[in-house]
Length: 96
Image (cartoon, rainbow, N blue to C red; front, side):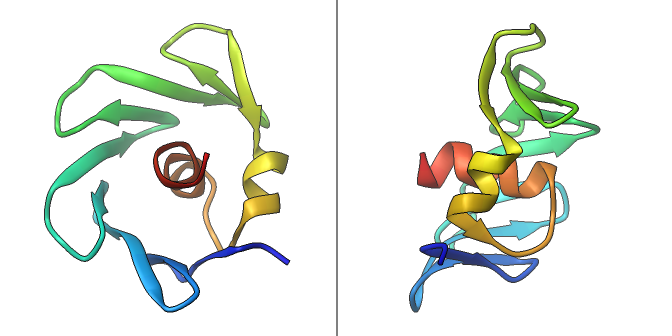
């Protein structure tokens, strides 16, 4: 049973909101500070354009390169809910 639950807008650990997603921005807690943004299959730092991670197939890779960090199987093991890139971003920034 995964410890975290993502309902499409909020990542929760039990009853506590760990992060929220509005549009293509992932924010910390219930607040408004942007941790990362999502475009295509890339996870970018803050509101900027610097690529921190990318998804290729079922692998999460570092930057725009090919160095494997984890797989989506690892993400699904820890977070229950919909999404692919969004769940990967939540896992990388809040669970891992």
